[in-house]
Length: 159
Image (cartoon, rainbow, N blue to C red; front, side, top):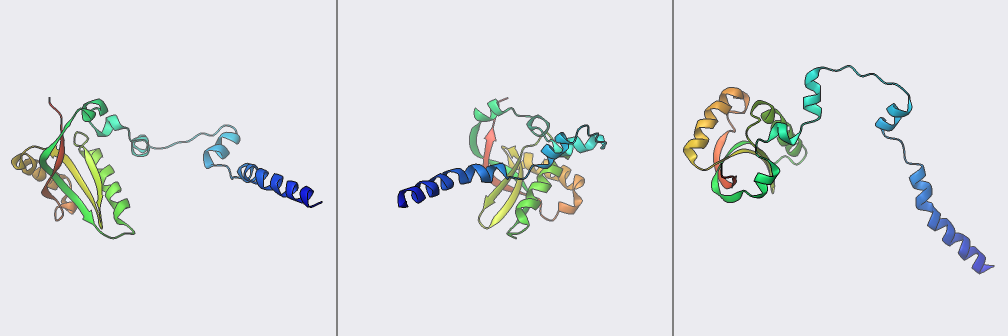
């Protein structure tokens, strides 16, 4: 009798994950697909915001970046904050906005405890970075108090 109870308990425990997985709620995509035809009307710019592709953001291919040399250089710091509740999301949001305006420049969202930072570009000289700072400040005057040139390790791709 004790063996029978032990076998039943073992079987119930073994089947528990399968029953839990079967009860998982459907995602919204599954719900929409199962409902039949669904027509969605949205502005053309919405797809660009929702589905940012690497090609749209970066002009340097992944293969070139893999072959890039890491060297001392300069980047432009656009954002830095240590608020643990909002800083990460704010850095990523500003990176998306920045990438829309300057798709030719790579963005780097970096966490260096306790700060989340958004840095952009890979500049070999400080003068080159300072020229771009003027352009960035004109495009984003609301960020101008935070924008500065900083030393960093950059990805340098031979052209």
